[in-house]
Image 1 (tube, rainbow, N blue to C red):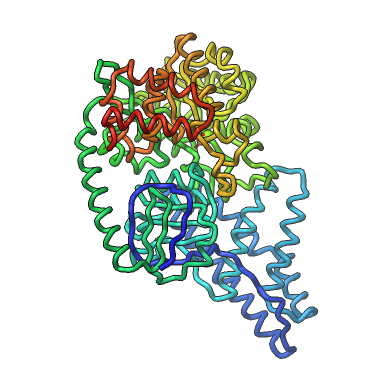
Image 2: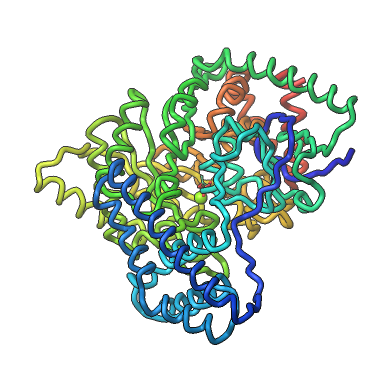
Length: 578
Ligand code: PEP
Ligand code: MG
């Protein structure tokens, strides 16, 4: 039996067979062919062209039937690439001259083609790079006789083991097939980990040697709460974990009884408990867990796992659905927060040295006003059907907020003049997740209706620790005294300006920090829905003076560890935990 320790990313226990998942990467050897084989390779190449063309036409038809003609037209660009005489002739003439396999030459020709496109100062052409890469992958798959890999194709219930998983990979997992996952890299608040929690799949990330130490078929125990993974466990360990699993299920059953109770302290102070969602499919589950609304709808997932950018109508339908489904509660829709670890395959954003500090979120949206306004208009239109609030991510200064509000005003005027209804008093918020925004919260508070503290990024930026890097995960401390001071100041400044302050970072759903945040006066806690019953239980076990005493006490310590130990001890004294 082998025991590995990684970073706990999503709680729960899973036992099952491992399945090693490798990203689709084509390593094609520079294989020389004999003269007699040239014709065979040319024929292979031509057959692959025909097969790929047929696949794209089928896909195009499917999309036209399900989503509409406009959406299907995006594949015209893919077909044009396949029919491009320059590419086809270059592959054939080089094949004859260099006598190398077709797959190698095709990949090389395409690589050079991409390099030319990337040099052209034209956004539209640059975006075509993702089309070329997409067609290229299809062609190579057909040339090499491989079939596409999809999580949906996995037949058995397995534990996925991978070097890395992107948030869009995770979003396409089906809970019925995947019992848990473990990855070599990643941090606790990387979006892959966040998605795992939303889907209630146990996960351990940052398990550096996972793909080297684990083979497909090995039996694994994944303990998502402690970050432990056992490879081919002995019968005693299996037995212990089976018992643990049952105990966990009983605790969950006990907490879930509280799901419909309000988050009311013993002395009558009520706070709001909302859920974070990535996809509208999560709504039944968040209602089941007792969410009183949605405190963060991460809309960027709507742009993932598709070949085009969603139209205003699609945005509108999706937001309207969410608004109606969660009534009478409210939904905070966050505008597109692309970047960092959230990349979209069809929006080829240039690779950057420091993606978390780069061209992302509101910065990207302000540079693409048409795309941004499509989303803003859709949110406004959907606001006629429920209680919607709108929130911008990654605000770092007042100019960004004003610029975004300028576009929002334009959208409102456009809708008014075309007679489209929307909520004229829709509430507007800024995420406070960049330290500079926290420092100027008083300035920002004058131009928004609420704040939502995004601790996932606020911690990353204030401690200067990449949230998705397992090597520095030990520094990623929500209770770092510097972080706690920033949080206290944001809440105090917000309240002085008479606006409410919520939190939608993972810290809001971490039981260890509930009492501090409650004591500091946080108005809304928004979290992965699975955490809601336990957080309600904690809030319902104390009075406000007790929580305030704990929050004040926390400020007397100098390290996150001391603060964590102190809160743990207090929770024991209050019999919240054993
Ligand atoms: C955050 O940064 O805390 C947050 C909630 O947003 P995201 O995790 O999507 O960056
Ligand atoms: Mg963030």
